[in-house]
Length: 263
Image (cartoon, rainbow, N blue to C red):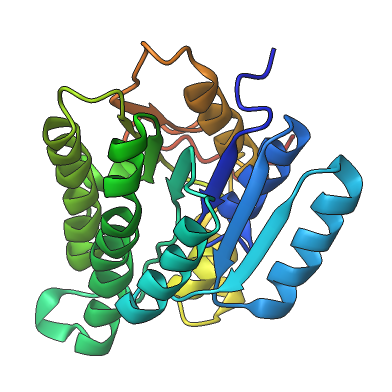
């Protein structure tokens, strides 16, 4: 049974990876969609495909969550059209670079902080008041195991994901006394474009991250998020950590030489 059929879900970072997988899953369950991302061509193709395939309404807009003016403009347009999301998935996020603080590139720092923390805040601030006024809504923040344990050279990315974890906890306190739910889903190793972005397009480095074991797929994470949003309204998952079976924490990953990935 789908409890999200007929509801409206807004997904940031929806053009690829976990965001696109969630868009496909939500549409298959009958949810109408608002898809935000920076890459317009990908976004339009996804929106057209999902609308045609599932018969749901799909709105797509090129929005960089770092741009507060653009976020507020698009949010105001949705509110004006009486399209306040029932589900807000703050998925947009990235890692940029891997280095010690003393060697770090401030451009990478700004990119991560502005997207992972300030972007989440920009979007949440734009919609939470309307969810509260209407008396329903569910915010899901895409965190990471990196928000639970710091790993070498992950410093700023770790800090942003610890920030997402703290914001999820803080938002839950802020909406206490309302029906609004706030959840976090924190994946471990997921094979998407994440590592390619982190290594600035170096595909060999990105591929090496997932060698020797079967990582999660974007669809695996979408399954977990679909479970979280499909729970009855009196049930709120505060935080869920999901990792591939080969991964037991940040440091313990069972990598087998010459292993073949399975699905």
